[in-house]
Length: 303
Image (tube, rainbow, N blue to C red):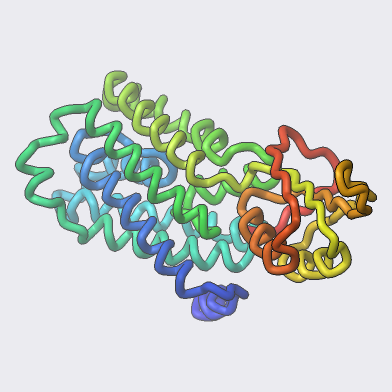
C-alpha cells in the first residue's frame, strides 16, 4: 500500500499543489451536498456513496448504534472504492488515480466529521423534499464537476463514468446517470417510490451541473491564419500533442499569401492554444468552431 501511494505521488503535474487544493475543495462541496441536504431528507445520492447508503441501511440494525450513520456510510464508501482505483490507475493514469484517491479519503473524513450548520437544522430544510433534492444535487454536482475539471474524481462510479466518457467521447453525466439507475430502482423497492422520484431529481440536477462544468468530451476546430507559420506550429507542439494541417491561403483584400493552420482540440486545451497563438503572433486571426463529431485518429490523452 505504501509503495502504491509513493508511485501515485510521483505523477507528473506542473500545478500539483493547485490541483490538490481544488480536488479537496470539490470533495468538500460534494460532501456538503450529500450530508447537509440529501441524507437528512432520506434521499439517496448516486454512485458508490448511494450504494454505501443502501448497504448500511441493511446492516445498521446489526450494529446497535455502534457508529453513526454518516461514519458507517463513509467507511463502506471507501471500501467499495478500493478495487475501482485499480481500474483508474490502469486505464486513466497515475495522476487521475492519485487525485481521486485523496478526494475519496478527504470526502470520507468530511462525511464523518463535517458538522451540519445550525441554520440548516433550524430551517429544517430536510422537510422540503424538492428543495433538498435541488440544493443537494446542485452542490454535490458542482463538487464532482470541479474535481473532474482538474482531472480527478470523487471515486466509485465517477471513475467508471470517466473511463467510459474518455473511451467513447460521450458526456460524463450520461454514463453517470445510466449507472445510477440501479440505485433508483433499489430505492423504489426498499424505501418508497416517492424517495426514488426525489433521488431521480437530485441525480438529474447533479448530472446537468457536472456536464456544465466538466466539458472534456467537447471538441473544437481552430482555424488560425498567421504570417508566422513555422514558429506557430513549433510553439503549439511544445504545449500540446495535436496534429495540425497547413492550408495555403491568400488575403482577399491584401492579396498577401498567408498560411491557415487547422487543428482540433478538446475544450480543456483551447485556452492553452489561444495563449500560445497570442505569444507568437498578436495579429493572428483565429476562428473557433464547435465540432459536432470527430472521426479518425484523434489522440485521447490520459486524464
